[in-house]
Amino acid sequence: MFIRTREEALQAVTDLLDLTDRPQQLLQSTILILSCLDVEPRRILAEAQALLIADGLDGRRRRRRAFLQRLEAPPVLLQDPEVDRLFHAAASSLDALELCGLIRDVFPGLRAERWQLARVLLEGEQEVRGRLVSALRGRGRADLVRVERLAVESLLAGRRPGWADRAGTLRTACLNVLRGSGLSADETLHQDAERLFEIVAVSDDQAGALLSALDERRTDAAARQIVRLHETMEAVLSLPDVPPADASQAA
Image (cartoon, rainbow, N blue to C red; front, side, top):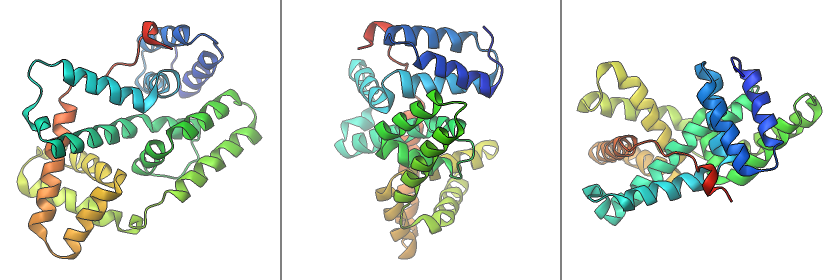
């Protein structure tokens, strides 16, 4: 079976959800991902497997920690408890940013940026998963899908941060620090700055601290925060991809 379009990928996910055996769901979804030749439908299938069929963000956190514990020489930076906390927080944010695209795939009319979707996913993963599954199983029933979309829109509105109108300030700060520090190559500068901004925006603690430093003209402190977070982001991205649970691990 070759899946070439977004609609075919979503229908395949719906069919997978109808299987009652979770190991079979994992096996069949893996086969579909491996046999999918087109980038976009393969992404949808991979995100759906990770978020809806496997064990979601929590499973990724567990497997990442287990991987780091198995290393003979864990990264030196993780021996500092504060850096370790920042590392795993950034890793969770990146996981959410990677998987939240499925929300827009299921609800294409949703008006929200990726960082906003990631916040909702991190703060209410089980509810979001339930809404996605319900909408996928209700494909073809516009009234049901609309109800689920409105529920997700309500989650987005309820989790809108008080600093949301200043997102541009955070974006500009991340871009300026990366440009001035030379931490990113010219060809990846804007991509790196946007991803760094998204990690900041997912966390109210990070966003609040950075805005406070900027408002108080503590430019050195703001730059240090951004550089430290960039280093943490690079450390997370240097790890091998966290694979989904295989069928033998399925509960």
